[in-house]
Image 1 (cartoon, rainbow, N blue to C red):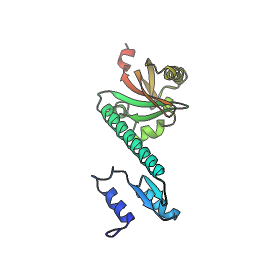
Image 2: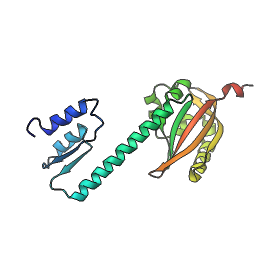
Image 3: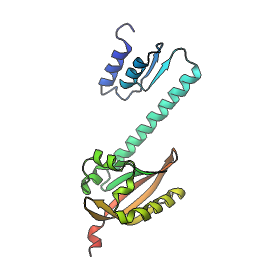
Image 4: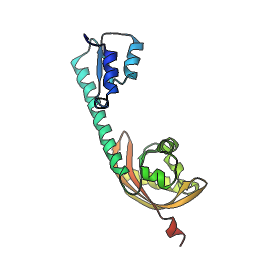
Length: 196
């Protein structure tokens, strides 16, 4: 390239907030694996090595477009959920039950630490957020509902530090992807009603 090389171009485009979300596919004639690794670390979505076939280019671009559309949809959904005036989480129900998102409201209302703390804690086993005596029956209920893509409504105890809070859990099936069923879950604090 006459003005700058591919590395400089990639660094420049990824440093500009107005351009950072544009997916970049790099075409190279090099077989250097270190250069390939560096290009991907700089933010390229893919690397095509010369010579390549038309079919490969079309398929890779289609894959990137699908991925970017999925990320945009997820981001829009998470933004919408974050604006809801209640505690919301997203569960992916498959081999495991994972938390994939938690609203700011959830993190604050139940004093769960930071968003990153919450996602790190429950990304592999979301059932751990519930009181230990409720985990087994609730997991069974969630799995049965997920098999039929049904809605769930249950009073359950949410683990909060050393104690727990009663919540009304409402889970609504949203979509399936990669052998997982995704649920939007609202958690409404009912602790005061339980004390009456």
